[in-house]
Image (cartoon, rainbow, N blue to C red):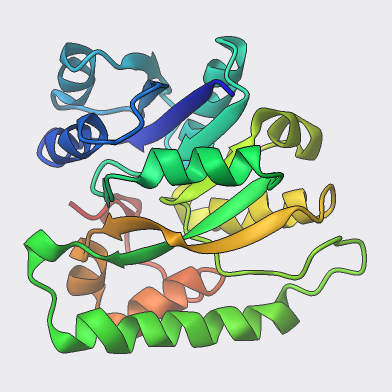
Length: 243
């Protein structure tokens, strides 16, 4: 299996080096790294290129748009397995190896676990209470996201920690090309995939440490409402991209 790791990035010069270090420390380094420069105004592209990543420009803002550009670029390069994370995340050292094993074992779409970044010194509430609320919301999602055409129930999905086959990505139509404030691209991608395969797995041992910066900027209530079909949005489009 030829793996590619896709990273959408908008003005991530400060955070990207940490991700690149985490990827360089992977036990399985047999993958192509594709960084999508999503209309950055800083040194994001230069930092990625200096680390040996394939840098693809996507001027239209949006995590789904950037992810789709990156995934399709990776597929054109010959990737048969696709992983995605974000520039402010820190995958655990066995992340690539674990994803490879799950895809090789028959899974077509894998949803991994998200935990707070240790270097951001999360509080007890950030370590336990907020993740518990997210899991409860995911249980509710089994009812909210019901689809008679789906071949698998809804599961908790984090866009910064997914793995899927290139074949499924093409079959289901891929990630939506939309603005970040218009929808949750990871949920849409999962729901599209659910209509094409039952080989979907929630993998608690596929772990990525994610940043708390949005939670700390917006607060728990607003962040949860944001993830719940954008029931809360910042006042301006610029505030959507928390930095």
